[in-house]
Length: 272
Image 1 (cartoon, rainbow, N blue to C red):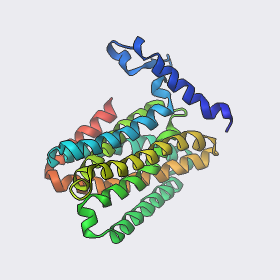
Image 2: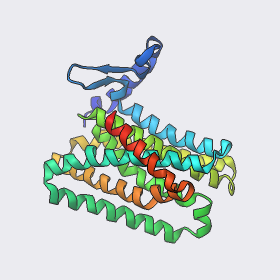
Image 3: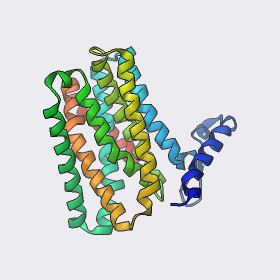
Image 4: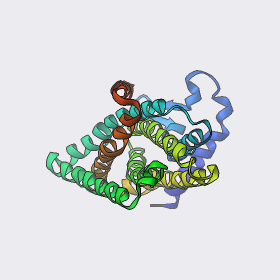
């Protein structure tokens, strides 16, 4: 990886922000530049935008949970919306390209490996964490921190050649991770100081933002075989998170209402 590739996104990101005042009307607020081939450019193709927004979503979600403490029903609904959106991203942006490149059986093997690895990690977290830790939000914080790394590494890799897929992925992760940090922040602040809770989630935000940049810098440089293998692995990790954490947590607080919320997240991501 050359120094130019390392620092060019920084230069472009700063330039995009410095030019912000000229984008003040209509859809231009999204700073989208779209070519005839349908590829996005400008701020929406810059990895720093994705890294910063992923990190900020966690901090903002935790802050809302700590100080505003929204009703847990609506937190759970938001979590289910994000879960439905993640289903689309893991299937179409991560797993399908791996199947096309590796074949269905080899891609499935890496996918299953991701499921097993992160299911095992979540089981370990559950065993190490006491029941009290689960109630006060530390268990969810640990799960988001560990599960978020492969998710955001995969999103960073999509920015090289599949910006529209990365944008859909970003929506899913912002909604899901923001709602998880909100739920955990509410619980953690009942047992810790508000600032200690925010410090924990700021640390997670730094890890998650760094994962996006690592995925952008290093995965595209791998041989295509290993790049799509990592993305299939990440898809399995996301499915593990959905089945073991996201949907059970949402159902606990919102019940059957999460089915409609999940449908909304799925359709918005798939159709838009």
